[in-house]
Length: 269
Ligand SMILES: CC(C)(COP(=O)(O)OP(=O)(O)OC[C@H]1O[C@@H](n2cnc3c(N)ncnc32)[C@H](O)[C@@H]1OP(=O)(O)O)[C@@H](O)C(=O)NCCC(=O)NCCS
Image 1 (cartoon, rainbow, N blue to C red):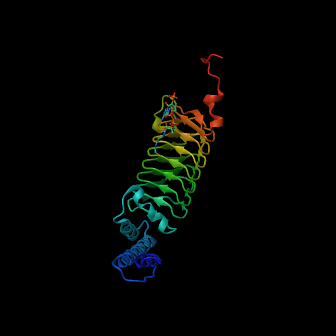
Image 2: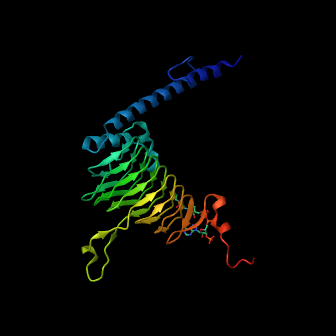
Image 3: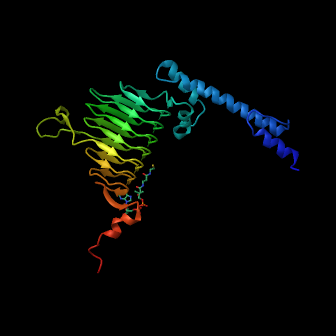
């Protein structure tokens, strides 16, 4: 026969059931009840959180005592409304939010004249100081489950930026699908903006720290862009690219490793 204390603990594990009254069991019941109450409190706050003064207060109460950065992303999972940090500055007439979206501290979402919709699909996470903008007909869509780490700038101006699902974008990355006019003899500030086309990033790609992606470029699904690279030409699916400008150094699949497929001029044959 099993020892009575282990039987008692096993029964305590079932939520809401308490068979026995050992101190360990009471502690478990206390913790369970406290967690239930805490979660109910969090859900209540999150239900009322938003951009107005009352919404900000509710968001502040929900995030009270949580750790910064990733430490409060769990709040977005608690209700389909997701979580918007009270310090985020959101001013966009056509912001489309999926479920469980996390918008962290000091994120800015803004709009320039004639900007198109800005869509953040389910479970997108935007971390501190990210800056997202649409303007002059540009549209921005970020696919489900994509993470944008702190300090990224994404400016869909004149053309579209489309980022796929479950893309990992490291801190400090920049996406610019326009240039200032640079004709001589006229102040650059006085010249109209122009574009060679939008930017797209395929599902499951990973961009390292401080990658810059310029106009008219597509980065393939599953591609990896090394830290500090500047992407000016399109990068194929599953390629690993590095440098300024970014060039393919190999592929994630060993079969496609270009270092093995290319003949090297200095290698004796
Ligand atoms: C792209 C990356 C994953 C490649 O890693 P790896 O497969 O171990 O590659 P290696 O270190 O073997 O380097 C392969 C070649 O690419 C070059 N390279 C690697 N990273 C580079 C970079 N950021 N810029 C320029 N060249 C780079 C290496 O010098 C090496 O060239 P060589 O063979 O002529 O010496 C890695 O270099 C990287 O940039 N990681 C991003 C880290 C990051 O930003 N993390 C943020 C957390 S989200």
